[in-house]
Image 1 (cartoon, helix red, strand yellow):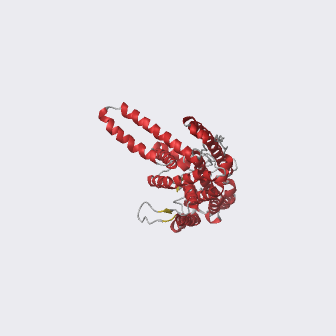
Image 2 (cartoon, rainbow, N blue to C red; image 1 turned 90 degrees about the vertical axis):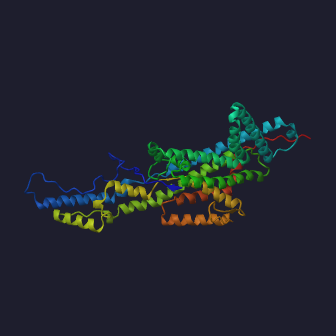
Image 3 (cartoon, rainbow, N blue to C red; image 1 turned 120 degrees about the vertical axis):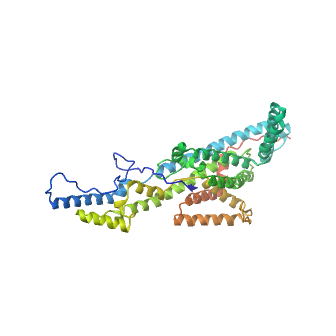
Length: 441
């Protein structure tokens, strides 16, 4: 996941206030007591007013963290649990339904299957034949409806699009569809009027208080290179992860019939993306946010109040010369909120779910080799390459690099490793085994 540009999110307050969306002071300069027409006002009265203001600001500074509150974590956890459970339950129900329908079609078209044991390979081959037959019928219809002058061009266009589609595996075709969805959302980012809506609903920010953005942000990409790199990685490692999930059902005893693994992969992909966003959200709320609030409410950031106008002018001049950005006297509310937003920026992208596919592929196929699409394209072992990527993410997370959401990468990798260990057994228990008639003698 990449970090989105900083955005001024509103911070939730624990105590009721007239304007909760502006928790910081909106005045950049301190106001001294104004004259009320009495020229002979005593100096002691001015000093008492200044000391009273000083006491009030100190009290507000000490209770800054308690009044500001802390972003929510419970709602995001509940959303992940509900969303992941719903995705897997629907995937299991839909897989069982489609497997039963494919079994019925297979037995109705060839009676020989009533005397043989049907395997997953037989189901996959039968569906591939159905797909090719459907594409050929569409090709005959399209070429017959167009004029003869354009028939050769239409034939070439149709074959150039659907021939690679028919030759590709089912997992790769699914990854292409996900990439098309990502590209459509990327186009929406390019409309200036849509950017405020996209920034709120398709980028997850820990300070926004939203939960559904854990799901929507995983399909959102704001930059073209971010989109292109994620789509290339998804096509390679996503299809490999799909193959592992498909083959894992063949290792069940007895073999569990599964006509398609599309819904299984989508349940895994959605859960991995939401978990990676949740992991990054928890790390930001539980560790980054308290340190940032403690820094803003520390005594070093509390302004020094003066008793006389001359000392006030001297203090302001010295602060402007020494540390114009560090003095609270010259810091406005938008700049303070911008600092909070820049320290906890929004994140978006499918890299968290892709990291889950990468990790599961490395554990499932340890002897595989990978190479970059650009030079140097020297092949290396997949486990060595994945270990190097995870090491970079660990260093970036510990050192606070903010260009990439390293915590989301690590969360996705952890989910992929956990699903490689427990996922196939969990999926097998979740599904209902379709009834297969015993072959007749």
